[in-house]
Image (cartoon, rainbow, N blue to C red; front, top):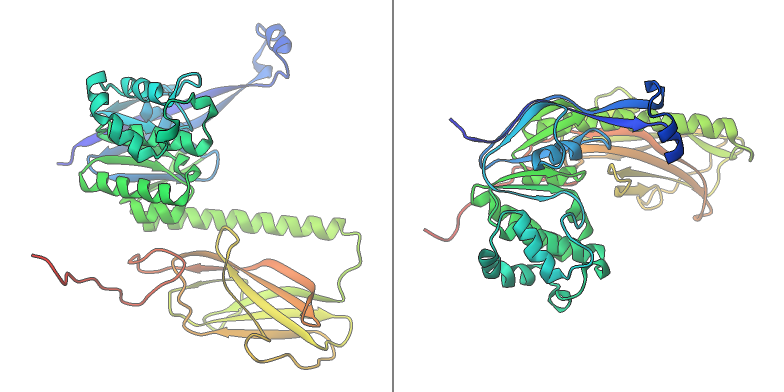
Length: 405
């Protein structure tokens, strides 16, 4: 039977939001009714067990309760109801510079932080050189940390946390502050912890990182557990929620734009994007890697179209283009047409990685002037095997030991 290092039972956390605009109003309204206060439940009846040696990702939209739950595990917040039980030594990276005193030097803060984590001075003496070497800030170790950059804070805090021999490591998004080489060093250390059988609880908005690092993902929504299971399945639930929210926001922004537009409508306009993957055109589609995709761009125009070009782009959830092309790039310049038209792009054997993508389209003239663009006009979901992560997919990946005993 697996040993649980974290046991969260029926945990709820309530915060009180004051509606008073000033300290004076708060004092005057202190004895009055609760109209000037509002209860906010950051967590509601959360039950969660984390096994020894597992790496668990806590994911969800902003305000879903991820960081609050991590702070409950770390003992920073106490539950309003329920209980949190831990086994083993815990090290936490919950906030940038948490546990550091700004008027102390980096050296002094290493000893202070280590003492907070339950490490004796003699043990810290043994770890000190390795901590400083890992952080890479040796020239500034005797400088007050209030003069440190955010990256230096994170380097030193992470270096202390991973050198105090923790059984449980809590990490809350702070690694995004470090530069790329340091982030890679941190990931290598976390993988080392995994190999040693330590337990890690990670909060991150980088879903591919969660899929890569974690053996389990917990999706929180409005303070409750929405999904809990293998990262591939749990993240699919979250991405579907994100996609629905994004589509709603895009449609609302378009309605507002049409209602408030003061300049005349463009002479040529993209009115819709259809995706065809199974014979039926629609504004959203689900594919597996290697499927063919047809993208139809609908154009309306008040005059004949000459020297015109239409292009499409597939973007990841961050809005970064992962694939783009246009008629000219494909060597098929569009002919003269009398008015509106439909331009069809065929993308055979599309090898995108699992996740959600949006489709943009634009029309331009004279090779330069963009007349109109329809952003996020269609949505694409790719469901893959889970054998690889990222924005590209390969068929039948394999691995073999070619040397060693």
